[in-house]
Image (cartoon, rainbow, N blue to C red; front, side, top):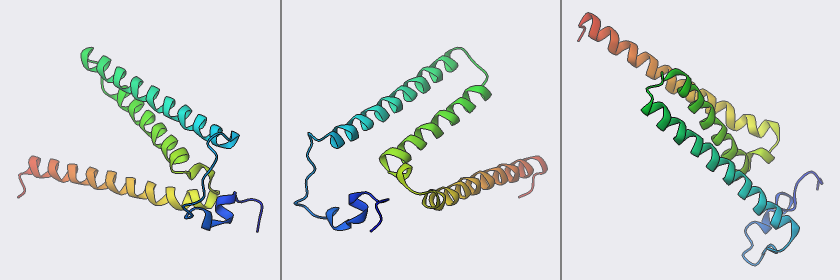
Length: 131
């Protein structure tokens, strides 16, 4: 068995063993809790910035292009943090990450392409009166 994998990955039976408990006072357990709290803090801060920016832009009639780009970037950052830490994708090898991300990117592109095409079809239908 390779030493590259953690204990859980090398011995999958431990994952499903009800009698296996991790010592909550161990350094490893405390490090996991500290990391979860750190990521939760980052997610909270990003959300607070998004809400504050949304309220500011709404009440001050800021053009929507720049805030929309900032919202997309902050949302992607939050999604990356959630997937990397809470879904453990950050600990995986590059090929596993690509196996998950490539279909996701293609699916998002698929949605954008069909929304774009649908809005164009609606515009053509309204402009030329095609039924």
